[in-house]
Length: 217
Image 1: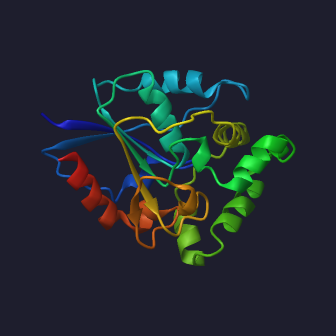
Image 2: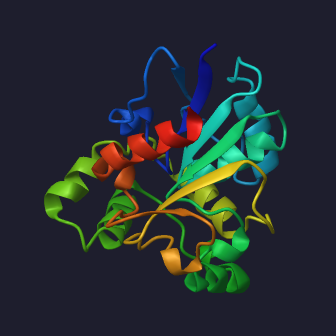
């Protein structure tokens, strides 16, 4: 019987980011969970995850999430039974958020600096990926199609205010040692991907495929 994998992209991204994730079709079947609009700026992450669950049609699936998608995958796993949770460029609990994120959460600065337009988001993306080449930034930006400010601000808030205190069972965490969004020095118990950045789902797919096959077969 095939393993059913449900894949959730990172903030603002669509499922095209998984184009280079290849596993044997006789053993695995992929299903892509695209982002939905929050019902309001105050929708809880638990309620959002419950709405996402309605798009999962198989029992005991494997959930794979990138960045904020990994946080959502963990929230979904609290609602339905899952065989495994796979995190890529994500965090397993609030203690793995970098100190600057924790400072913003404590001071609530994120309530003052809201994304109000796509131009604001584009500047933020350029800042995050300033250490990468222009070509790489352009490549990643091609996949960022879910850019509504309500969703972006909601996702940022949920990441900063996430309350999970400990890693969940059956979690596999792949993390790049060059990730500048979630620096690896704050990450515990992960599979380290050499020279992997926060966008390694695009740039280190060959290595990721090898690791996934090894842990899922």
